[in-house]
Length: 151
Image (cartoon, rainbow, N blue to C red; front, side):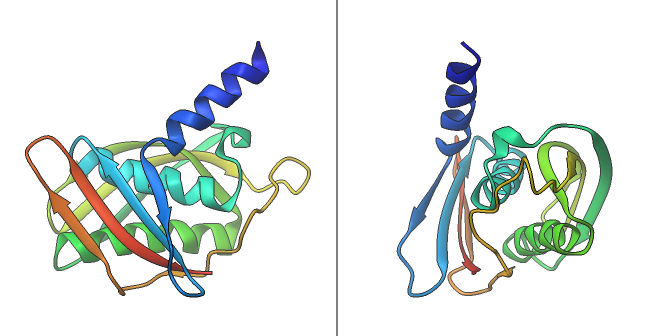
């Protein structure tokens, strides 16, 4: 039963993002019902692409705040900050609570835990989110983002 629950959780996370081919880098397309959900889903996809997110527990939290000149750059700054936190302190994100958001400002409480080699198998090293092909589209019932990650 526990194995089935983990498989379903993993399926749900993977249902809102997909990969696309890009020479030597990793192309990602993420969707959400709105911008807040899109930013949350992009962060969860980032963790899931680094390690199996179902192994990451909500043991501690932090508040993250980023600003940028437009929504595309804001998404890039958000994901870049999460990568920076992982690379400098080993913190993996398992959940997000959006606290405040505009087209130039994003503030969220992130939940997760420190990377543990025995439990978190690193599937790939993600160095950064690039500006190449960075795009956010907001429609009436869905927001989508497309970006490239340097691996």
